[in-house]
Length: 482
Image: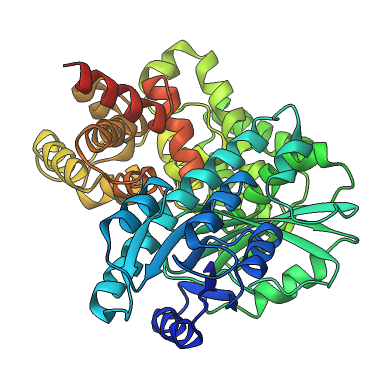
């Protein structure tokens, strides 16, 4: 919900603009409407609204002057100028000062609605870009975190920091008022995906109890959420961001764990479990191996383990398999993963267990029909549906190909693992959209199958060599030269 200030010296004009905004549901929220430009400027400086609707001719201060004084205060606020005068000089001056639009009184509701739709889209794109940049700076241990926080927090800082990562059931959500916390709290909200928000909380005391209660009461809109521990050190914010994100994926272990607080991984316990699995494998005791792999879910539930532990277990298995040259030549899709990549590769922990057993036990290939023909169909389906959530285990079942053999076919036919092939498809499409469309980075991210802007940014940079925004600017500059 974007915050709006309305200033016009004619009260009837205020009513008209208010009615227009109220017709748009939860997209905009009016935080101030006034006939006094000086009061509007005061509110702008204190409350940092997203957009100001201002009359161009007012006593004390014109709309143009209000824009100029706002810019002088280094406030990044969009302006829509409204006037009863259609003179070109007014329009030109307003646009030169950076006004987003110019509307005439009385408002034409149809034209005004078009303007509001355009404004909302611009604010969404601007927010996603700014929020992602802010989040990346924090996650990458920006040297002066205090300076970063100053750009978002409005008041004097409280003692403690805490982070909440929330995934919503729908992209049409309202994050306003989601968290009902104590009164002495500052909240910074970052939109990091079509259904993902991160909340940075600055408060006097740990807010975990209030956070959990708020999220549990909103189960109709909240899909899952992760809560970090709290810290009195601002330098810990990068770690709080990461652990909150990790906790939000604990439903990977158990679908009933929709709201989780981060608990440090239990590596020693998981290592013992991994050693038992590897021992069964070395002794070729496939019955014991099956018991281990299909018992992973029970082991994790009993010991209250999270996705961080699942990543550690997987990487222990990968480390073992890569030591054996003969085994490594047959296992084509065992590669080290982080927790984000784990979600890309497996739907849940149960699928991980099944996959490990099928790969390591090497059952006889009992193909139904021509495997090569089926694999061709599988590839065609993958090429068309790469923007969806696809898992190799599901695809191999759908096309009646043993999952181990499917891995071999991927490596043989495409020279890539399934995970690498999916990433390659998505990156090629992302490059195409960045070069040939006006879609925002957020929309490109969504169109190629990623729900998290930060993860998309990270994968793009790793594969293409720069961030999506830098790539678009560079390719645009090259096109201009040509």
